[in-house]
Amino acid sequence: MSGGPVSGGPVSGVPVPAERRGRPRSAAVDRAVIETVLRLLEDGVTVAELSMERIAREAGVGKATVYRRWAGKEALMLDVLRSLDDSAPELAGGPARDDLVALLEFLRRRGLAKRSSAVLRTAVAQVRAHPRLWQEYHDTVVAARRRAFHEVLRRGMAAGEIRADLDVDLLTDLFVSPMLSRAILHDWQELPEGLAEQIVDAVLEGVRASPADGPGDSPGSSGPAVPGRKS
Image (cartoon, rainbow, N blue to C red):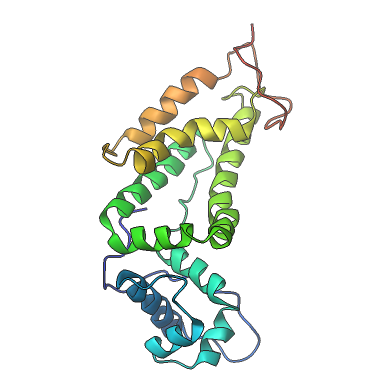
């Protein structure tokens, strides 16, 4: 993520929920509602204290207008979080290393944005305090990011770039965990440029297929990982 919205600034790239039949939606209304929620969170209002009625009133729109766009507060809060997130990077589809670097660089920039944006930190903390809402965010946004890693890893296995006897879910953790550890668990550590490349190259050195291995016959097997390099 390349810097998230700053306090009090307009939200760009606000996701538009699925269209319903009828009149075209107003993007301005969508932005007004989401910006209102962000402002309330920044002012110290908790998710539990928010109601669709209060959000509508603060945004200067009717309650029915809000409900036409979001079925309830949880759906609205998911779009609030998405509004603070850049779109996932476009992947070149070439060597697996390049796409893995792009995906990790996205996480690095998002980590930097979370450190510098008080509103992003507040919104994430508020959502994490509500397990069902956090699970929904994880099942949609976070799961989509992991699927992107899985697809790149399977492609790398099929191309003979990565050993095919390893589980893609485990491999994803090997690539992602060092970045998340610095960004979240050890947030005093720097997230310098080039970190994504360092992580990818270090992990690839250990999981790269040897010439004798050849392309994987069954990339992305969901079975247990087999330790050690093939002989």
